[in-house]
Length: 233
Image (cartoon, rainbow, N blue to C red; front, side):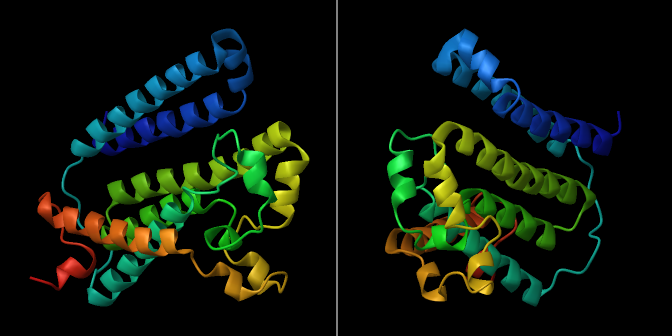
């Protein structure tokens, strides 16, 4: 099998197994195996298919870039990754979408910070991170990998809306009515003030720290220098 074909097949397996196990098969498997048993199966499948992607990615031959990557594009991509990092860090506290026992209580809170931007800040963070990587690594393999991550994050978020509405009932439906799937949709539509979207301290400072460490690690681990480190040192 050609390297690109193998990468595509492994990406399809990764996405397909995630979606099938998260939705149509989850109820039956969890009923038979218990929630703990299901999570073990889910984790094993996720890790195994991810390893297949990594191996396929490593087997890709060098590819010429599809467009020129200059400093302005690097700056834009770096800012997108910074925004993704802030969304991700903000999603770790008070997120009703996470499988936490206090999810219903979290859904009663007023949407602030990253949750005023989108009710799925973690998944949008992954999608933006993948998009930024495709911008500055414009090869066929990277675009396939980035598209896989973006598809899984956004389609998975839509499926999570359905699942959470079923599991949490009115608590999630009320949360969904006060938030938006698409970032800033409520602000653009005039349904919510822009001031509510200012990230809270743990999201802002945690996101900046994550961005600094992750972009520094790019160069430290022998990959392409990224973020501000491209112009420092």
